[in-house]
Structures are given as structure tokens and as C-alpha cells.
Amino acid sequence: MLRTHHCGELNMTHIGQQVTLSGWVAKRRDLGSLTFVDLRDRYGITQLSFNEEYNSTLLEEARKLGREFVVQATGKVTERSNKNAKLPTGEIEIIVEKLTVLNPSLTPPFTIEEDTDGGDDIRMQFRYLDLRRDNVRQNMMLRHQMARYTRQYLDSKGFIEVETPVLIKSTPEGARDFIVPSRMNPGQFYALPQSPQTFKQLLMVSGFDRYYQIVKCFRDEDLRADRQPEFTQIDCEMSFVEQEDILNLFEGLVQYLFKEVKGIDIGQLPRMTFDEAMHRYGNDKPDTRFGMEFQYLKPLTGDRNFQVFDTAECVLGICAKGCGNYTRKQLDELTEWVKRPQIGARGLVYVLCQPDGSYKSSVDKFYNQDDLEKWANLCGAEKGDLILVLSGNTRTVQKQMSELRLEMGQRLGYRDKSRFSALWVIDFPLLEQDEESGKWHAMHHPFTSPKPEDNGKLESDPGAVRANAYDMVINGTEVGGGSIRIFNKDLQARMFKRIGFTEEEARNQFGFLMSAFEYGAPPHGGIAFGFDRLCSIFGGADGIRDFIAFPKNNQGRDMMIDAPSVIDHRQLKELGIKIQ
Ligand code: ASP
Image (cartoon, rainbow, N blue to C red; front, side, top):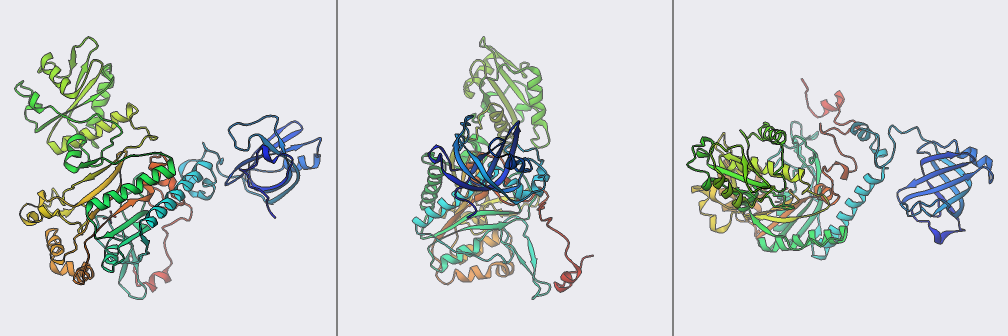
């Protein structure tokens, strides 16, 4: 037997027992005639104790142990004189009687501790060592729990997990496909799925009624902190349902996850239309952990000869509580911040609400105290607050103000990662227009159904058509999204036409789906959650990387196995691929 217990379970109730533990040497401390070794495994850390008086040969052996050696130790569980309240095993130690080195280790390139000294690259290259760190492993445990409870919930609701293929054909869902050459079909390629969208819809045609899959998806996009070329979705589809049924069922899923995994009662999820979200927060995924909602000041800013506001379609203000004492330097810095190309504002107008009830603004030349008081009233600003104002074209200024609101929320500590605010955003537009080409695209994907009452406007007024589509948003991040689908062949054909597919293109790409719709397709709809993101939000982290066992870096590289890599000539030839 290599162990009788693991390293996280021994405590005062085991005093006097003879035990054997196996694990990794996390730390060794030599003090005069004593040596202590922290032995680590997945479950925790237990202190091994070596004493010259008790056994000097063993002490010498212990002093040869390097970090990350794999050892087995047998000895007696004894009460510690120097207790460590932070460790579950902190009241005891093992007085070692027998020590075996099961495997030595090279000195690891970084220390395996919560606050490691390893930079990103080196930790990625030695990910198997990084995963030994307690906090990284905790993230993986959280992920496991999330998957487990997801399965439990969906199973209890009658969903069955079905695997869909990974080698498929390109589907236009906005991103680029990863392509796999087919040796047996020279010159032809598979694509890796961006999502199992069409397959899950076909399963509904097959009568599976309720499908789910925790599934890898692949998108060849530029990477950011919360994106990976391969990621995981909780993908779901249901038949004979309306939007309301889906919202209720999946609201239930996140409530269940919050309860089981975090012990939090998240409550009912508010619903907000896309238009309302844009109006109040300038964002279709508003961070509702805090207010700082937009106020529309245009009706209060006219006729004062301030060209910037007079010519602007929209003047927006937000109130930053308690920032009325911002210095000139801070305000200049904030102005530079909104003028950065990423935000693109032309300038920033501010109003400081002074402690004496007066106002000091960057537009004092144009607006008197009465004017500014009206602004302040509309914005809910009181003495000691700061009003920030941007102006311009409505959509543009909403976007810019959204960024500024998030930034101020961050600076004011409103975006606390241990607090959660979830909501549904509904009634998205079905289509969006590309500014340059004037072409219409599906905002969600081409299988999303228009609201029946807007159906007739598909050709005449495409911008006004709303979709039966919904997103779930937590803390300003879209964690899931889905829609009620088109299940009628003619409507699907109209949709393809609207987004610029010729009949032939539609048949080539999606003939199988259109045909399936001729064999009794039920009304259906679904949703997919970004599983990595959901885990990172539950874990209170920014990026998804630390919730993926073996992630890729920002260049899409796996630093550990060094992929992607060139392949040898023979392989290329076999695949019929020529590289110039
Ligand atoms: N397939 C969609 C996506 O990946 C989700 C859905 O509509 O169910 O975003």
C-alpha cells in the first residue's frame, strides 16, 4: 500500500495512529536538530517531522529531499506544539519512522505556491507543474463541480447528452473555421465546429426533444483574455417550446449552479430588452452590479451657443458618486482616457458638484448655475459628486459612455468579483447592417427566428425586425445566448436570401437542414453557455485561461507541446498539400 491516508485529512482524531502518506515535497525547513517537510497532494498538506534525537539517519535522509521529490513516509500522527490554524491538518504532524524516495525531481523552474514567481510563458510551458499549484487546481475543481451540477440539473429535466461530430463542414457563424484536410478526399477539407448548431437542430427533427452536450467548439478568431481558439459550451436544444419556456428552464440552471457551487441565492433574473439595455447602459451586456445609468441631457443643453452640444444628436451624462473632489489633473487624465483611439471620444465635459452647492464645470462659459443644476437633478448628482458628459451620434456616444461607465465603476470599486448580478437581455434585432458594404448579417445566426409579428418586415424594413433571441448576462459578461429557431423551410429560405445567400449557396451549405425541415420539423429553440467563461465568473477571475487545464496563449500556441508545428513533407504530400 503506497498510502493509508491522503495529505489533507489527518487531524487530532488520528493522534497516535500509524499512517503512511505519499506526495510531493512542497517545502523543507531545517532548524538545528529538526527538519520539517510539507508533504503535498491534491487534498492538502501535512507536516512531516524529523528529529535528530529520535533518528539521526532519517534526519540526514530528509535533509537531502529537494522540492517536488515524490516521497512516501510512514510514522505516527502526533500533536504539534506549534499549530497552524490555516491548515486543516495544522494541529498535527507525522513523526516519521520510515522514508522512501519514490522519485526525485529536478528543481522546478518556478515555485509551486499560490503567489508563484513564474511568469506566464514559463508557467504555460510547464503547465503540469502550474497545475500543482493549489489555486489553479481549485479552479479545475470548480470546473468539475460546474459540469457535474449542470449534468445533474439537465438530467433531472429530461435532457439527454448526445455527441455530435467534430469533423464537419464549414458553417458561417461569424468566425473563421479551423480546417482539417482529408487524406482520403484529396483537395477537400473538414471544418471543426464553431458550435453544434445545425446538428442539435437536426436532433430535434429526429424527435430527441431535449438535447444537451458539454462540448468543445473551435473558432479561429483573434484572441483576447477571455477567448481561446478551442473552448467549451453547454449546448442545449428543446422542442415544442417558446422563448418563455427556455428562459425559465435555463434561469433554473444558473440558479441551481449558484446555489450548489457557491451557496448563493441569485434570485429571479430581471429581463431587459436590447433597446432598454442600450438606452440605460449603452451596452447589450450591461454590468448591473452598479447603477450609474445614462441620463439624456440633450433637452437641457440647447440655445447656449455651445456648438459641440448644439450639433450633437445625443448628449449623455453619468454621475460618479463622491468624485466631486477630482483634481484638474485627474480630470485631464480622464479626458485623455476617453480620447484614446479605443474609446474615440473627442473630449469630455465635466461638472463638479461643490460642497457649498455650487457647480464648477468645463463649460462654465456657456452654461450658468441654473443650467448645471438641472443637469445635476436629472443625473441624481448631489454635493460632492461628479457629472461626466459625452456627446455625439447616439450609437457612438452610447458606446463611448458605456466604456467610461465601466471604467468609473472599476475605479470606484463597484465591480467586486465576489458579487453577482445576472439578467436576461431579450428582443435583439434579428439583423445588423455592415456600415461599409450595407449588407445585412444575422446578429445571432441565420437559424434564429424573427418575432412572428415582425415577420412581414424582413424584406421591407430589415433593421426593424426583432428576433426571438436572448442572452444571459452576468456581471457585464455574456455567458450564454440562444434563440427560438426557424423551423419552416420557406422562412429559412427568406432569411438566407436576406443575408445575401443565393439559392444555390444556401442549398450547398445548408441543403441538409432545408431538406430536414420538409420531414416534419417541430418548433424548437435552444441556448449555449460559454462554459469556460461561466466557470471564470464563478471563480471570480478575469480570464478563462486558468479554468482550462491546458490552455493556449494569446498567439494561439500551446507552449507546452509546442503546437501548432510544421509537419513533415511526407505527411503534406499524402494530404495533397503544397506549401509554397
Ligand atoms: N449556437 C449558438 C452559439 O454558439 C447558440 C445557440 O443559438 O444555441 O452562440
